[in-house]
Amino acid sequence: MLWLTCPNCGRRPVDEFAFGGEFPTVPDRITDPGERDVDYVWMFDNIAGPSTERWFHHAGCRRWQTVRRDTTTDEVLQQETDTVF
Amino acid sequence: MNEFVETLLGLEWHEPKKAYDVVIIGGGGHGLATAYYLATRHGITNVAVLESNYIGSGNSGRNTTIIRANYGIPEAIRFYQRSLELYGTLEDETGCWIMHATKGLLWLAHTETSMRAERARCMLNTACGAETVMVTPAEAKTICPELDLSGGGRYPVLGASHHTGAATARHDRVVWAYAQGAMRQGVDVLQNTRVTGLLRDGDRVTGVRTATGDISAGVVLSAVGGNVTTIANYAEVRLPVRTHPLQAFVTNGYAQGFGPIISDTELFCYVSQTARGQMLIGAEFDQQPSYSKQSSFNFLQSCSSKVSHLLPFLKKLRILRQWTGICDVSADFSPIMGHTGVDGLLITTGWGTWGFKAIPAGGSLMAELIATGKTPELLQPFSLDRFARDHALADQGSTGTR
Image 1 (cartoon, rainbow over the protein chains, first blue to last red):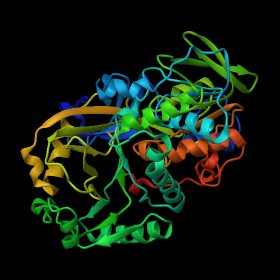
Image 2 (cartoon, each protein chain N blue to C red):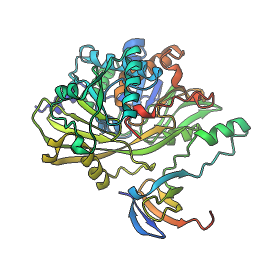
Image 3 (tube, rainbow over the protein chains, first blue to last red):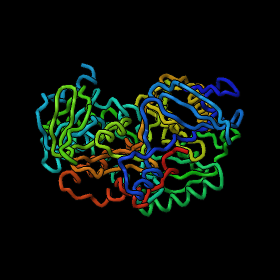
Image 4 (tube, chains in turn brown, blue):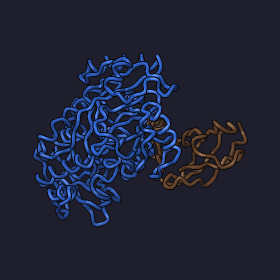
């Protein structure tokens, strides 16, 4: 089971957080601007391994956080609250 | 002789060849069904199905075995209705007993909003051939006497849509039936053969790379569940797919004959009884994408709480087993089938939590596409390029997920 360590609230179960998505990336090999837009809107990297994501602690401090998580093990590698809003 | 061994006696294993007309990656329901229909309907028997583990070890062995066609958009309803009908005749066709049982499905509604949605869905489903009728709480109670219409005081039942054609079948047996049928026609099924890359000739995919050697192919079909992005990356194909864990559990035995399948609009959970009498309970997939097949106590707790409000007798049962599968959820919650934009590589993916019910239709239509080179009409809306054409098939409400 996935637990996240919130910098403000400590170690909390995943149910307290809302997944806010990954940082979308568009591969450089796609050069056509229209195709890049389609890729940005629809396609996912769906990374197996360390992935950088946004999470919202809705049942706690209600802050957005950036989490680096290994998707193959659900191990959280790094988690920090945004300093700029 | 035990039943399991007896079933496997019908399977014929072969040594791999160097080249095939069609190579299918993924020995689950969709891969084996495609091979079966290629061999039996189109006479294409020079086919290999490559499975990284044993056949049916992925999501075909982890689903909740519900077969239904009550979806929210006409394209999907017609497709799943075809599948539901093919499931009904599968036992006669293959001669294998897949424990198919038509049970009907009650989709409960607890608010006026969801009553309106269910009424609309009933009309749409019936118009597209999947018979669905609205029932009152009293009628729902007749269909399923165990139901608590007050929902434990928290979730009063205002009504339900009754999809009469819904059924269940034994998931392993479906896989074995297709495997056996395909093998008898000369299809090679290769277990423990993990695909580690795709062979490319210019822009074209010409085969697959495995740990035991390269296999060349006229056409490669990816019927992988859970790791489709890995396969797509080999050919630099971008997919609107995320991999999420989906959990389910069974309780110990309850008196046989628990009638229908119960599903819920607001609580996102579903209950049915297996042939052994165990109550099989599932819910929506986990919110975060993940490849770890870890089950969680949170899920057991929240799901048990919800279903035992509706079916109070479940409180007296114990949970026997819990498991997790990883499913490829597409961005618009509809499957993706057909060409990838790369010559020689076809794909059937995005099966999220709705893949098992689609096995016969998905398999037969993909086989038709491979054999004739033309996309069958039922398949056309589900092509990968629908996202670029701005024709996404948004149907999240019908999948039993939030």
